[in-house]
Amino acid sequence: MSKPAREARGPMRGGPKAMAKPSNLGDTVKRIARYMKDEKWLLVIVFFAIIISSLANIIGISALQIVIDDFLHPM
Image (cartoon, rainbow, N blue to C red; front, side, top):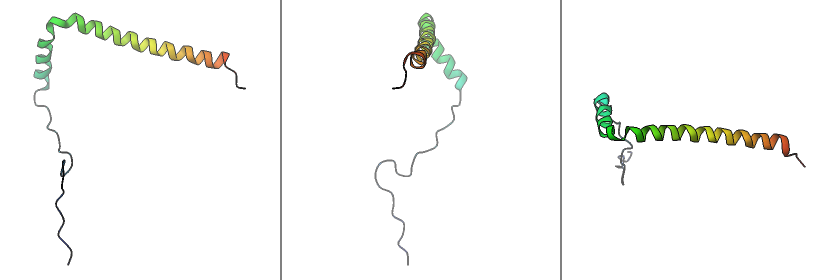
């Protein structure tokens, strides 16, 4: 006869559980917007800072490509 299956031990027995779907996503977003109403200007600054950072990253990579392609020659 075969042995009965042993029960899993330790933390996270049985693996991850399914997460519930958010019930009122719109209400949650509105509530967060109410919390942030006094800091709208700060959100605008953060948005533009992200855009400027992304553009600077793209420009830096493009400049590095030009340096590698035009000025560095293989030995």
